[in-house]
Amino acid sequence: MHEWPLVIFTLLVQGSVGITLFITFTLAYANDSLDTKEKCRYALPLMLTAFIAGALGLMASTAHLGYPLNAFHALRHVDSSWLSREIIFASLYLGILGLATLIALFTKRVWTILLLIASLLGIIDIFCMSAVYVHSSVETWMHFNTYWMFYGAALGLGAIACLWSLATHPVLSSQQVKRVAITAVALVIGITLCRLVEQPLYMGYLATLGNNDVATFPHQPLSAFEQLSNLRLASWLILIAGVGALTLCVRGHRINKRLLALGSVLVVVAEVLLRLSFFSIN
Image 1: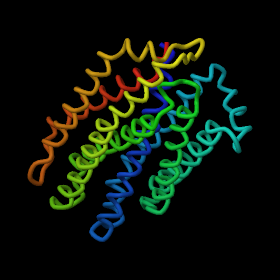
Image 2: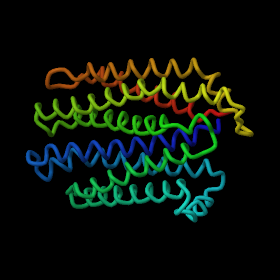
Image 3: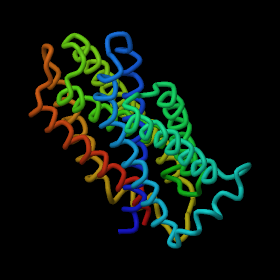
């Protein structure tokens, strides 16, 4: 399926940014209670995960270009092309994150300021990535729903990585683990509710397009969107179930790994299915 490179690219890069955001937040929150060694013990596995995910995502993006060297031509119109901006900010994000990871590997010190810079670049990169599709000629992409979807996936995948790190690398106190875990879950619940509330607006927007003689040759995105209605419904139900499991996994001062595993699998599956639906336009 021609959608898979885009699905892999967007989800891996967004997940990478989400992980970096949660690393930065956790280190800033627990800065006074962790020594240098504990910071590295907590952050380094996540930093490596985020860097590898981002690198694999960028590699997958070149597969979509057909001829990988075409990526260099996409940088020629930074002043007018969202794709050029997205490539630049993705490269800057990955470069800063890679530098921070190398420093942590060789010096056993985590430079939080580099992670903060990488987080800001990652947020901008997701905005540019979303804008590539919002400003395309595909009707089902040209809506604020695209921003909600991409940022929502970043927070959801980042929260999952954060919860697993808290469950498997207990360098924080039990009270701190509980507070960070509750914050992560609250963000996932909040962004999921926002995405659900926004869906009627998105459907209303598509309904107005359906009343017009709009065509995007050689694709038929509205037709494909209608044909995948059952897939989208199943995806939303799976996502809600996954968020519910993540919510229940945070009880007391410990994280229930079984519920965390169940919630993680459901959320990831739901995001993949929603992304496949998003990119299926013919």
